[in-house]
Length: 435
Ligand code: PMP
Image 1 (cartoon, rainbow, N blue to C red):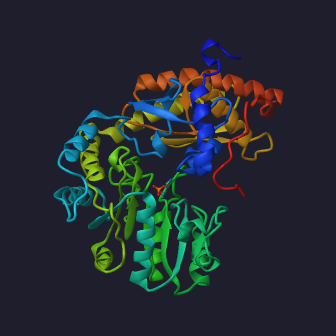
Image 2 (image 1 turned 90 degrees about the vertical axis):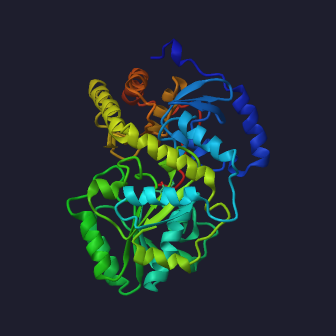
Image 3 (image 1 turned 180 degrees about the vertical axis):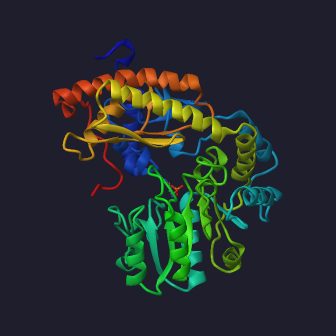
């Protein structure tokens, strides 16, 4: 059942830019998750042109409520004035210098104040810089090669070799990293026994959409230390979102090292590797060094972002509006009798949908129809919700009104068994093959 507002958006300019991109940009985007494969073609734009607060506009002028937020960084909102002013002030004084700038020290001290494990701090640009640095540092500290990992940790060889997109990663490198499943501590016990004396670190996202089992993270820390390995938390998503000090502050377990990125500078590129000084001091010698490591734009943005996050209790407010969104969704899933097929999981600040077909298997078709129907009504999502400070109660209400129409279409399609045939383009292709 479609209403007037759900007619198809005009996407002419998007399509013509996509045709040009196909000739010059492999993958048509700089990040897999931003490319055309992640959006149902036919209704999805391919290029965005601007953002303001909780909204973005595509190159044809269509407006969307943005729940992807540049893959997570935009925690205050697009074009947030005080962050942009801080960066503009910095730009007027130069941005790249041949010696450290004072703002580097100021932000290091701020992170030390906020993040429990952060006795010392180094900066990178992408989250992958921080995770690759953490792994190298752990290997240097322990004089061991193997790594256990849980979650997604970036594009570098040491991790991507464990995934289905491992082309180009040497076999010898692939064999050094072993993934494990979250909340299964027995599996990690077994891996430590199997690779006795060889594991440098466990690197893991401390939490994603399921909460840790009672005592899980503390037991992981004890297990690592008993075997002479380090515990590294990858807080690239959880940092500044679940708590200003990361999930480690929220959940009360402090790792040896931690990696931050994404939301720390409201979209300006910045990441950080932080940790216990006894380990971090090895970076006097271990190579973690690149041209833009101390770029002052990202640091000025981070300082201004932290100031806003603290002054306005942004994380607390996001928890409230996130709960409003989650409650509204749960009510609708109940109203449309969709609870069997669709659930909304996670902390209120970072929720995701789980879509299942009638046999209980993950359904990429239902996910795609959800995205299609959301996009054509003005909501940009991959099926998750990251919130900015500008996602006010009014924006959530606007979203829920749209979702009511979306779920009505989904309910009809699922009942009619015609989800796939309603898709206007290919279903979303996940970045990694699902096993
Ligand atoms: N760790 C986690 C948990 C992530 O979600 C990501 C990015 N999605 C990374 C590391 C890598 O960050 P980046 O893409 O900025 O290199």
